[in-house]
Structure formats: structure tokens, C-alpha cells
Image (cartoon, rainbow, N blue to C red; front, side):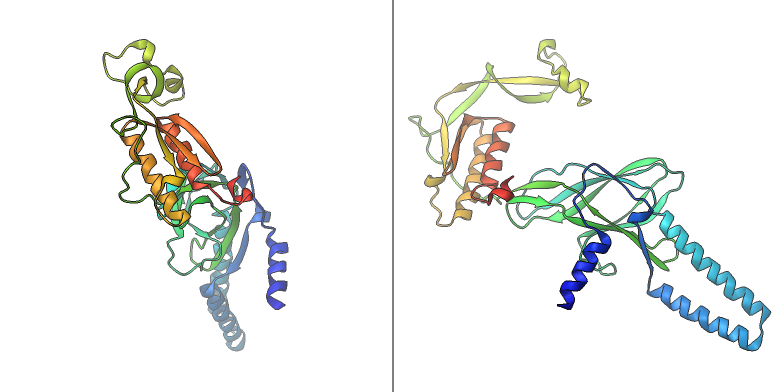
Length: 327
């Protein structure tokens, strides 16, 4: 009962919600309390003040008030170290289960003051414990700094960044200033592929899948420009987006298609079958095969290329998950 009331009070006080776009740390978003060192200093200052009053020490008063003013200024600087920072969430690339996702966060410091000793941790972790879910960094003045927050992935599906705590104890460690961040960002986690899994037999007489050879039929991706490449093959739209000179590649299919069928996987459990199919997709793509995907909830027509590989892995990662998780 007491724990439930405490949780409701915490939710009411800090008003956690999922946020979109850019977050600006205004005065209402920043909380501050003394640290253990701050409470210790306050206790010492009270003792010094009592001694000054008892013995009427003029220099003692001076020292006590100077230390008190130093503590007050430390609280102000701890607040200013977070105030008016602009934070927005970037993208996170898809990974395989067992790897660590890197969620990119952009910290834009428009002021002339550099921000020092900022710490970002997963909410629920201890502020003082060393945790793999925490990073420390500085943000120079008048700069936009990209910070990658690591989050391990333990299962396939969508991995949400969740709620983070940004805090600082700069400059003297006497006050702990913090703010909560909860961005609507996530990354896709593919099943961990098996180390080895022979491809299933294709429909061609030799049992191979449909391979792609250099030709002019289907778009097969981009590669870096090499001196002597034909100008009509240059991807001008990619160049306009600042991706450098790249050349379009085309391929011509030869042979028969290779179907990667869920029912053809010899494994017993669903997760083992999906891990095998992830390996099939990677191997088929690396060998230049044209492959399709068959799952109990649908199929993807044969093709090849990066887009085909990513779509196959996406369907495998989200297979048989609850609808609210898949979307």
C-alpha cells in the first residue's frame, strides 16, 4: 500500500510522459537536492555557526558565511549546467539479439557556457553505482554534440530506449541536479542467427538458388564512384543528400528462386527456427541469390539486395509477436 502511494506521488510529481521532437530543459524540468557531501557540509556549517555565536568569533563568522555562499553558488552552477539544453533523439540502427544498441541523442548547447560532467543513466539505476547503462560526457559551448547511449538487446522485436535520467553534480559535488527524458524512439532487434546453417535446396536442377549477375534489368544497390564510371549511372539524388558520388548497380537474374520456408527449418522450437532463417537470409544475400521468405503469417516474393535482406529480417524479428509490440 505504501509503495503504491509512493509510486503515484512520484508519477504526479515528475509527470513522466513520452516526448516527441526537441526537449528544452527549462526551470520546471530540473530538480535539485543536496548530495551526501552537501548534507555533510551543511551540518559542519551549522556547528561552525554555533561555535561562532558561542565564542563571538568575528573571523569565524566570515569563514562560515564564505563557505555558505560557496555552497549556494555551487547549487546555482549545478542548475545552470543543465538549464536550457536542447535535446532530441536520433535514429538507432537495427541489431541482432545479444548485441548492444546505440541510441543517438543530440545535445544542443546554444549558450556561451560549456556544460561539464553530464551523466546519462537508465532510470532505476543507482546514481552512484558503476553501471553499463550510464555514460558521462561534456557539451562544449555553441555546439551540437551527438551522444550514443548503449542499451543491450536480450530478445528479438522492438527495443525501446525508455526513460533516462540526465544529471550533474558539477562543480563541487554538493548538489545533485537532474531531469527526466523519455523519447519515443526504438530500434529493431533481429534474432541472433545460428553460426552455421546450410541453405535449403532451391528449385533449380543443381539445388542452388537464383543468382544475380551483372546486367541492366533490376536495381541492385549503390557503390562508390570509380574513375571511368558512366555519368548516367551516377546517383545524383544521393550526391545531393551529401552522401558523396555513388554509382547505381543493376543485375540480371539467372536460374531459379530460393525459398526460405519456416516449415522447412528442422528445429523444434520457434525461436530456433527463426534463428536458422536469419542465418539463411544472411547467407543467401552474401552469395548473391534471389530468395523469398515464407512465414505462417505471409510470404515475401523472391528478390535480392539490401532492401530485401532488411525486410526479411524485419519480418522474422516481428513474427508471432503481439500486435501492440509489432507496431
